[in-house]
Image (cartoon, rainbow, N blue to C red; front, side, top):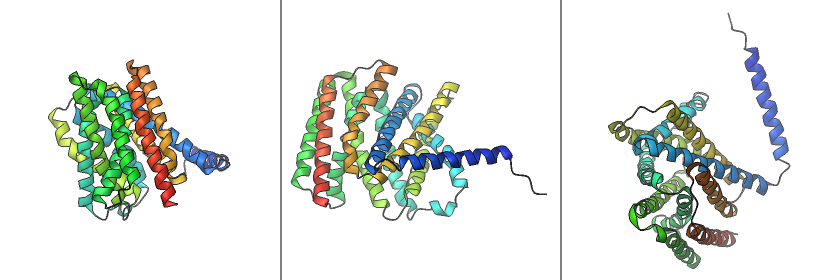
Length: 314
């Protein structure tokens, strides 16, 4: 005998459909550029919250255990979506290529997580602004893209901004961790360049899934070496980190769908605001003036280069 559909489940599904339709109708009244900027702002807030959760984990658990559990949490949260789709739709063109990208990403994350407990959130966010500079240089060296004069100018200005940030922090133990955090940027850039190459034959959902799987696999053996049973509070942070990671990358993808990437670069300075607020509220951290100045120089160079690229492309 067939089971009767759950009336509560039917009502909940109907309410969800009505809410999604209402939000879609309201949002379509806004210009595309506004929608893109709102998605990007939401992504910035979410990913800064993810950095906070990751920092809390790395301060209380082994680096590799924190990394591994964050990605395993994301994998568990992704599983319900996998059950609704065919597994064949998540098969990549090259498993070896996906694993190579996962290995590169794991190395970058290892450096990032190692330095995370020892660096102010604002400094960490400011240093992450160097990412587009390294991606630009890597695209010229590895993908054969032309290295125009404005790209060299942007790269030199970006590194000048880095010196402004790291200069006052190079003394003592903090200086070492600042350099470790900075060293993760070019490796993240390689991971992003590999992702760019893979988007030619793999969909974003395939790339995200295999990154989650590969980082979990590579970090699990290292995590088991110094495994410690998480407390109830740490389990909560782990689940939050997994959810924030999924949500933040989804919001950023929606932003990229709505607006050209170059148009969103100026909003990245808001990430420094969110990081400063999180750092001040949770860790009593106050960003240094040099951090703000250096971030402004790096971001200014990035925005200028992005606008030049858009003008040349147009």
